[in-house]
Image (cartoon, rainbow, N blue to C red; front, side):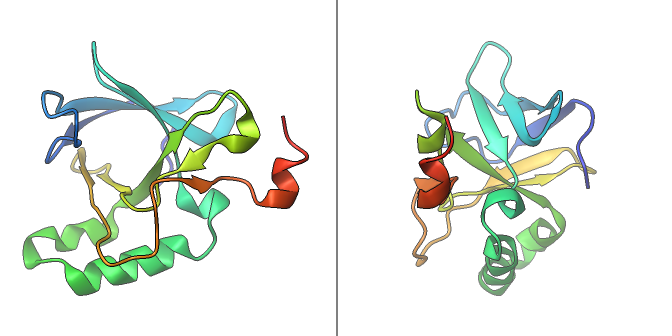
Length: 138
């Protein structure tokens, strides 16, 4: 489902390190369909992207792994949109994405959860751009 307007979400459970924040607004960035802001009122602000824009095959692998390894209570996550938290850098070509702990956002129920992918080869810092593209951008 494409996000074209702001959406207020309840984060359950709260993001690690931000346990006092459980309400965020997902905000599309005007004129840039590849990025979104996830912002807490008077709290943290995260840049997000969808994995299919930068990491082909990740989404299918993550949803498959998730459905195999989660409990019945979280089965609805398989229907959620998946987003990645971006770590910004002074050089755009050095931006990274957290593939180890994606965000699952159910826009219909207005719920969000961050799931850590245990026993995976993913880390919290995968470059958005491949080496050949990093030399050309910024």
